[in-house]
Length: 404
Image 1 (cartoon, one colour):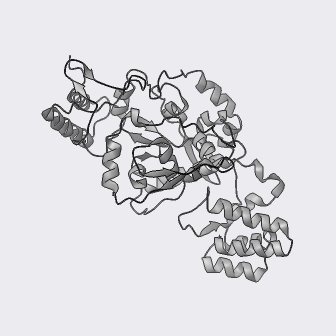
Image 2 (cartoon, helix red, strand yellow):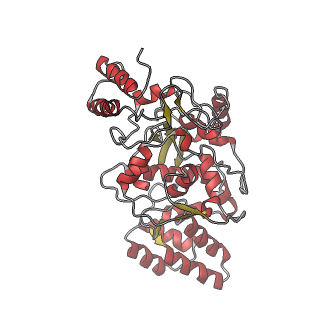
């Protein structure tokens, strides 16, 4: 399931490209799922956290001996600490009543196996120890963006052929927004615990091809666009979730573009502007002035009449700039019930679907549409190329669009 989502990730827009438009993990998702604040300062570690600096930091901030620190870093073959070793340090410092060192060991272990987890799942980078150098001010960091940058970066890496796995909390986001795509159980939620703990995964034997086809057949009416995170949430909605620009953690910067997925905030989806370039930008300054960005975006937004509402022309634009189906055409797609005279039927309360799928009563149109989609995938022309325009028009008609 994770792989099927990861292959739809576009790093330049920081979003998943799905048949009905884009979706992404937002700062509001992070706030709702992990119960951590999304405001604060971006963290910059020392420039070169090597093995020597990791040893010195462990001696000073964790209160271990020099020999203990050397043994740990050499065992890990680099500037990192194992979770097991941090547990030992924690209990040892508690026994010695060195509570500041115990607190640092505990906090480093906590972030290392949750929001800042790497793909080893056994180690945490020594650079994160400097987050807790001053225990009185560690609440100043932008923990929400930290979790999001790490996950976005893993998703970007997942598009590389050599990547075999990704870390993070992507599955809990999928459980919230895609109730029909996967098997999951909901546990009784404890109000004092982050919402992500309400979900448990059910064992399944389905492979990537299965989930790929499921995602290709999704409609916008199948999605929970805006989960009710405020129910029993430790933190409430923060306007910084509508910030547009780049967010940073350590030396990694990623675009954060909620305008491309604005239906997840209860607004009508419009055609978004081109993603901003990362040139001559002071990311930290823009983040500190996020309210200017939020005001500018809100001035262009309109509340949605139904959860998946988008402006006229959005879907046509989206299919011109993206190829949102991984399979050229989903022959097994089961669309809404269809009557020749009455047209497709929908749940009146849900609003009309903007991606109703092909008319399955026309097998020939179905097959032709698949061939046209393959031709588009192979065609190298730009958006204004005459051949591309004609192919897109033919594809639109084959999917039930107006041919007049």
